[in-house]
Amino acid sequence: APLKAHFSGTVPSLVMIGTIYGLTWALLGEKTRPSLAGYGKFVSLSIVVASFVVSVSFSAILLDLAYDSTWSPQSVEKIASHLKAQTSDGDDVMSGAVIWEVQASRRPFHMISHPLAFEYGMSEEKKATIQLAAASHPPKAIILDGYTEKIYFRQVPSLNELLSSRYQFVTATGPPGPHVRLYRLNDQPFIDIAQ
Image (cartoon, rainbow, N blue to C red; front, side, top):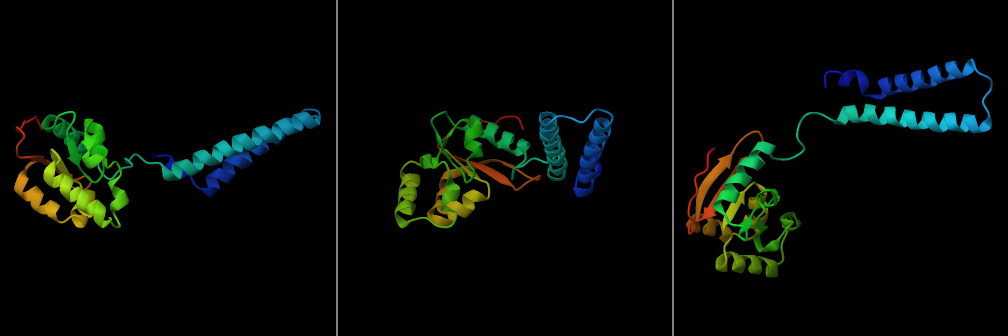
């Protein structure tokens, strides 16, 4: 990270490529003229090396030490461990970003593995199916991660009432990243795990 400014960008890339070609030609100047096959080998090798240098230089611009996720690894670990403690292997969990279920080895609600597909709308039939499934077999846990509210709660408003009447707050995570709140179905025994 401290050397990022020195090895990234157009100018350092051009300097490195120029150095590679200049050094190579200087070393070739002392030898006899290469054959056509030797010259082709040189060109091929120099293109590969130049491509490597350019890709490293470009990568240095893009890479940093931050994680590439909405939630920190610590938040995911905390919610997943609480979820695992509050639910059983076959239990359904409702969330908008199914990472919680994956990390805790739980099933997504109604086997919807990509809820973001409903972000911009849901058919009336699908809304009715979700509403019926939530009423007859409510998920053992609901995770409000921002996407849950945007997808499920916006499309099926009765889920707000279900959450407030049948679920109990378990835990939440905060910054870095958005707040995430875990709720469990009231008929489940509460298991308090160490923070």
